[in-house]
Length: 227
Image (cartoon, rainbow, N blue to C red; front, side, top):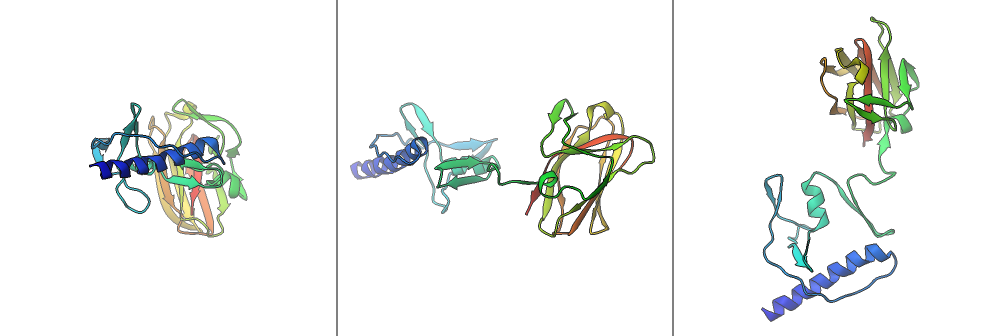
């Protein structure tokens, strides 16, 4: 037991060094501490999780000074978030890394469009959107607003939140998606249906066309490209 306890103290010391490194940037500090291992269980949304490191080795949570410490990678992945370690800045990112995401309106703005609106704040279900978002307007029944994007064959999918702008919540609209001029899929928004996040396969197409049928305005929020 004494040997096991010493090993665990040593492991805890390494963990503390890593955590302290993040706080002190370039300064590395080592500290020997005593921690409590008591078979702590991790359950996320009712599902038991076995914490593991990047190599698949089980990592046991512990308690130190009344605080429970959990492996950040295991927790991040358990809630569906990618965990990224950036050694140069000693930073752990859970989810999106600032500056790493590619947004449709930024890297592939439309080269041809009708009734396309970007750079304007709009609201869906009472939530406001502005950056990395756009909306298509149909001022007159029978119009077919659209936007053409040159993807250059670089992306596998588009993740975007689609919904009625608040003042047109009672309308019905259908969004048509075309890849390289060929119909791919349609997304229908029923009257009073709330905004929904969808993933649209792009299949590394060269061209994406989004067209709207129906009256009113439909928003496309946080349109993120996936390679």
